[in-house]
Amino acid sequence: MAANNWKDRLITAGFWFAAFIIVGILLGIVGYVVVKGFTSINLDFILQPPSRAGRAGGISTTIVSTLYLTLMSLLIAVPIGVGSAIYLEEYARSNSKFARLVNLTSETLAGIPSIIFGLFGFVFFVIFLGLGWSVLSGSLTLAIMVLPTITRTAQEAVSSVSHEYRENSLALGATKWQTTRKVILPSALPGIVTGVILAVGRAVGETAALILTAGSSLGMPVVPTDPARTMAVHLYVLAMEGISMERAFGTAFLIVVLIIVINYLANLSLSKISKAMR
Image (cartoon, rainbow, N blue to C red; front, side, top):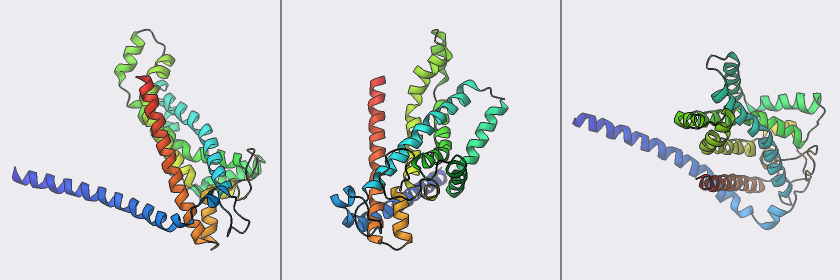
């Protein structure tokens, strides 16, 4: 009995140690970026557009481009991803070959490097469809990239909803679609939002695919056919070309802040929606 207690304590200590390592790495990376980048942050840096050389000015156009591309990609990917998850869990037969093909495709897409998505987007959207380097080309490429994440997390969220909810709804005379829309989706909403948050994090931090599809223009994008430079691409250019490491760290700091703010707003919205549904 004493030996078992000793083993349990050792395993528990190992889990705690692993958790502390993960938290320590996160705090170390974020802390380093904050310390190096905080001194560059001021209103001019946030509100002014960057100069052509990148050594002066701010990053206002890159902030707008980042939000523009992320929002457009989510508008494309979320309905497709959630719709696919509902089909796979609620409507597809267990022995459906098409459903197995969709699952296999989603898992395969999740493991493809981002540069491959960028090359595909460049050849198909930019050249073949003639969309050029634009917000639209970048958003379509990002939507394909984040689609597996949204689909898989939504699928897990839908499958975790108790079957009793489905049976009770159908027993009361509701149709399959009414049950899905009014019972399953509200119950699965927290998991779906988690998938969307993960997708936002990948979209905001993407570089390679967007250089090849959205371009690297410093101008303010207005219509979807305009080229754009996101914050991550701007950070890459500043750091790799040795233009200004100080401004590169400032941009990295704002990327971290942007992701934190988006996550906070998403969780706050989810909390209010959940209370309204009760």
